[in-house]
Each structure stands twice: as structure tokens, then as C-alpha cells.
Amino acid sequence: MGAPLAGIRVVEIASFVAVPAAGALLADLGAEVIKVEVPWGEIYRHARPRMAGFDNDFPAGPPFQMDNRGKKSLALDLALPQAQEALSQVIATADIVITNVLPARLEKYGLSPDALREKRPELIVGRLSGYGPEGDRANDPAFDYTAFWALSGLMDHLHDLDSPPGWMRPGIGDHSAAMSLVVGILAALRSRDVDGKGQVIDVTLQQIGYYINGNDTALALVTGETPPRHDRRAPRNPLWNHYRCQDDRWLFLVMIDSDRYWPAFTRSIGRPELAEDERFNDPSQRFRNSGELVKTLDEIFAERPLGKWIEPMNAERLIWAPVRTLAEAIHDENAEANGGFAVVDHPEYGTFKTVAPPLRMSGHEMDGSNPAPVLSANTAEVLAEAGVDEETIALLVAVAD
Image 1: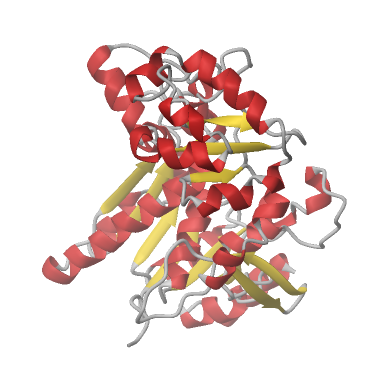
Image 2: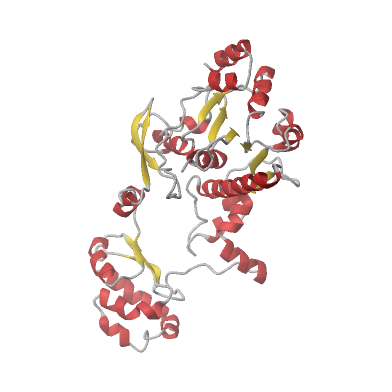
């Protein structure tokens, strides 16, 4: 079986995370993805680990490498009229354009969806923005920290009662948005197969925030209330809670159907008599006495370090997990066995590991091992294929170098 998107050409006009991540997924599926980049390389490309506080001095930006694997690099300075015309010739060969450039800037360079699709109605345009293409905020810049995290209610909601608002790690909203953008593009390709017409796919970071938090958002829309925060000291279900161990590490119990697991759980912690304790012997009693049960479990879990709880908890097939550090999590044998990480052999940076794509296909290998392109590596090649004249190519390559 060939690659699902073999023969599909994508032009990516974007920087940072969400749209490039979508482009990487399209490349994983077999599309030819041409990344349009400024001649000096976007900031994300140059974000080395040491700049983020790591001791390691890996010579490239590992997140950039992950989100740009398998692409070609076309370096253009769109301030030059020759670059704008060259890009229009490249787009004329494409099936899909994906971008996170703000609408006003797209208009400035003649790259608005309307302008592009007036020339080629079969073109599919995927746009990502903070707040959507309509309304007063259409041209407002955004990161997922603002539109996805803070404005959607997630930032306020995801913190303990006595703590300040939660801090999000980089790219969480962006990678969620990338998958939505790819879903829309695949649907648009299917529709084009039927009627020959392209369309515009819009994904907004703010909407992704509402959707990712859809359970709570749906409740808030119906009730007009913010759902109550989890209080680990008095949870509705003490078997759906986190507990500190002797070594200040944590474990997380997620036994939502608590009655099913209660006897086995009491055996795992060496306290089978709790199974018959009238204060805790059914879900209602555990709810009524949750504060007391949490205090009891806090004392029990504090008797051993985290590592000493793994065997007895797993022996009873409970639904739980140790709260790992990320440095621990990347050495998970099960993740390795299921292809969670890829080994990249990069022409500039040698061999290193990265995160594999978020899905696998039985008929198409997509392990995430393709390297991201060296800056401007394909500028001359891509422009020549698009029919740009040799003099212009020489000028644009010289600018890129």
C-alpha cells in the first residue's frame, strides 16, 4: 500500500508550533510538505535546550525538529517582490496551503484564502488563529498560552484550591490544534475527490481550549457555573485522588467505579479490614467520610517510598499510576514497545531520539524518523520545479544564504 497522501503537495507558511505540527503529520502520511521560512530561520528552529534552562547543549531545537520532520525548506524573504511572485508560483503547484499568518498580513502578500482560491477553486486552505477569522480579534496575535489556556477557562480551573493559576507547558494547545487541522484537511481532500472543489478549514486555539475541556465546558454552558475544583483533602471519591509517599513522590488512584475495586485496594495497601469498616464500605459512606479516609490513606502511603507501592498495587490490577518525572517517563518500556519514540539520523546534528507521531497505521509506516530540513536546503530545487526563472532563483538563494 502506498502512502495515503502520496502525490499531495502542501505549502506551509507558518512558524512556531501548531501549523508546523500539522504539516509534520501530513508529511508522515506521505504528503510533500514545503516549509516556507524566513532566510535566517524562525526562532523556534534556534531554541536550543540550554535556552530553556537545561544543562544539555544539543545544537538544535528538539521541538522544532519534531514538528518539522519530513519537510522541504524554502527560505524566502517576502519583503522582496521577487519572493512574493516566486511563492505564488510554488502555490500554483500545491493542493493545500496551511498557515497561521494573521489575515491582514495574508492580504498584504496576496495570500488570503479568497485571493488564492479565486485563482484555483480546487485549492484547500487550512488556517489556524487564536480567535478566528471573523470579529474584532481576527488580527490579534496569540499563543496557546493565551487563547487556548487562559481565555478558555483551563488556566483558572487546573490548579489546587490554595494555589495560584496553573502554568501550562509549551505546545499542549498547539499540538491539539494541529490534529484538528489535519482532520479538517483530510475531510476536505475527501470532499474534493467527489466534487473537485477545495475549501477553507479554520481552527482556533480558543475553540480547541473549549473542546479539550469539553466535559466541564458543556456543564458550564448548561449550569452557568464553574465546576467545583477537586479538593484532594475531601474528594467525592477517595479512590480517585493523589497521595504523597514517604519519599515525597506521589501516586494517582483513578478507580472511578470505586465499589468494584475497594476490596482489592484494601488488600494492596495491607489493610483488608478497611473493606468491612462501616465508615467506608460503600461509595456513599466513603463520600460522607472522605476527609477521614483521605487522612487514613495519607498515613498509609507515607509509610513507604513510591517504588515500594508499585508491586502490591499492580498485583491487584488496580487503575493507578505513579506520578513520574518526564525524565523517568521517557524510559517507559511499554511506550518503547509501541513505537512511542523515534530515532532520527540528521545530516547536521547526528542521531537523536524524538517523539513519534500520535497514531500508527497497519498499512503505512509512519515512525517519525524523518529529519527536519536544513534551513534553505530545498530553495533552488522547489523554485525550479515551480518554473521560477534562473536569475530570480539565484537572487533568492543568495538572499537565503
